[in-house]
Length: 240
Image (cartoon, rainbow, N blue to C red; front, side):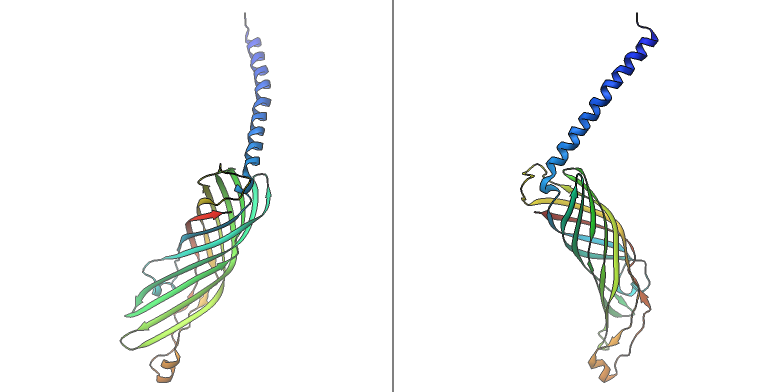
């Protein structure tokens, strides 16, 4: 007859046998996953997407109908280091953004273009799923104009400021089973959320050469502008 003591002893024995077996199975699964990565992990990737940033800044208000700034993203990256599930990629990224509005009867237009160098740490949860953390220092080129059609006046301003992004995201691979030892094109869907920051710059609108001569317009100061706020980006990419 099984006593309580014997039952506890049998359970302890079963646990002692199952734990190593489970650990071995997990280790085999880990090795199989890592050996399958191949060019799924080590590749060059090119992508494009759409970025939307929240910009709660008074210097941005005359050029937009809301506090959001939309931009098209074009980027490329190369994995430089890889160890087990971890990898490090470095690349180049361009955000081409812009907006337009009206201020006191005048048409306003703004361009906000980021030129960044993303440094990205990646972790392959599965061959088809990658989580990443990214920092991206660089610069933003701002352009802005104010045009009053009735008076024929136009004021312009442009300049560079320091810019940087920090973000977290994930990439999903549509097909991870095809020839991991080769470099066929592979399609990824990407999404990220983060914070974008730029140094502030004082708007200083000056008339164009013709208006300077005629005296139809004078320099205008609209204070300082900075593009700082949370953003998200959705995109597609091809790796080779």
